[in-house]
Length: 258
Image 1: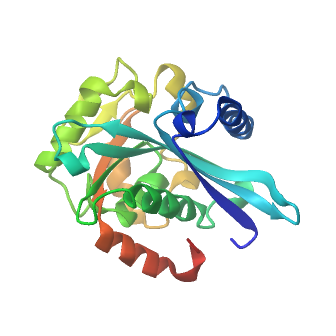
Image 2: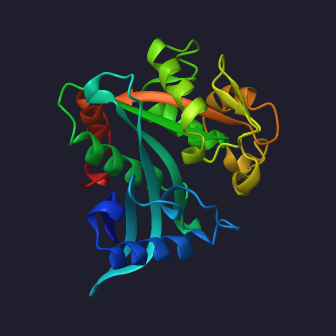
């Protein structure tokens, strides 16, 4: 990834001048529109004040070239969590150029995102993370990268904090995750049945299409088994702390170059 420049944009709607925020959002819109049609009013496209975005541009002799990938995450308050952990991170939206897919770009983006957000937290705290997807490949990546992920093959019963977060999302934060108001939440399995309705229909995928599978077929089968109906999405709840971040970065070695 030496030919790429990664940049972190922390709550640009609050920290950037309006013109710079508009320029960033417009660039992201144009890039995402090549993969998503129609473009949903979601994540960084709806509100830049509570988002953290990581971008990857081609490196050129004069600086930044064309945008190649980005991930947009939203910070969500959960007041009932401990004071140092009340703001959780929802990973949200990732768009990658076709030429870079399945080449480790997802890990490159996520490692920078997580390290940046965690760096502002007390060193002994947990950063709670959520993800919502119906693509088995994405679900397996989350299960492999984070700690204590529910649902996952290694954790088939939700914990107390998992339930607190999931219930808060179900009641109060559906719009931030583009969950259809008509979706029903399967609290035992953490699946929003019919989640991808309305604007979310642009994210619908065929879970039986092998292009969306991870190479770990056992993990694939686990998540495909949760996705029973059209438009279902799995809500994953996990956490990461300093020790897990250190292990993840060590495993990445020099590839991340953070």
